[in-house]
Image 1 (cartoon, rainbow, N blue to C red):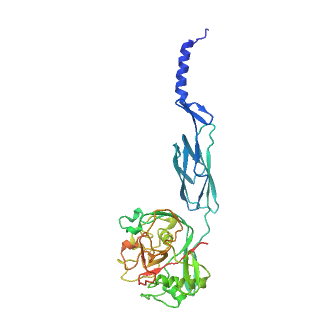
Image 2: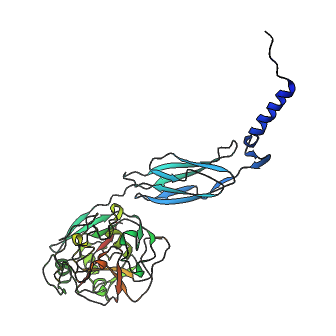
Length: 383
């Protein structure tokens, strides 16, 4: 059989067509040919490692390139977006909480998929779940219950669930990262205050299980005598906390404003309620509409997600910070302004309405002020 032969001229035309179609995609080592121009491919990333706390968080890195790129990771507990892009761009990385007692690692790879161009690797590590647990102790016959609060990242201030009830001083919202700490399950009771101080200054002397009130910030922190410094606050020998620490050998303190709000919101277990533990204020707070004009025994309302009671109502609670204006900058373990004239108090009180019972509500007054609707709650660092 005679072979069919294409005419030389026709074959030449087909070749030209094929080459014209493939030309933009011809691959060179370390470069590509685009529109008849040979372009050297560049690729770089802003970070070579990411370190996440155990409770999960969000990080980002930037990609610098003059060509298309893709992102891959080898861990199901990481979410990376976007997974691809072109030219310069930013990549967000979210780590889920680590519920294991061992740290875990992963690798993120950014590449152009071009022969001769080396991809970039980002090494990821996430810290293990720490061993921090609730505990109880007895001081001169009075019980003190502390709740373990695992640290993490949260948005502080007037978040969306607060609706239109926010005051100006609750803005701007800002990202806060906290280390582990302990928070009192209940407000400090009249019984515990009397066990430490030998008196009961409360306006409503109802009994050992009622919150102590009518105590100033200075009464709690002290004003004279020997001192101990805890988380930037000087505690004096004539104050409640110094005396408590002498009895227990621990370093109890007032919570920072950020710790207070984080715990009120439920920490890592938060359901994003408006009040501490519910969207229905009466379920979790003694406030003006249900208090009958007085304080009530601690723990009489439902606890929040962490098992902490009365953060939305019964008595307002002193914090360690000076009262100041919020910044939009992200912060880690903030302790408030370095100076001021008013100290922060948080939470709702038996005398005030639902607007003051919200988790983002804040107020401040001079540290020598005493009132029958202001008490406090203890905190302690995990280390």
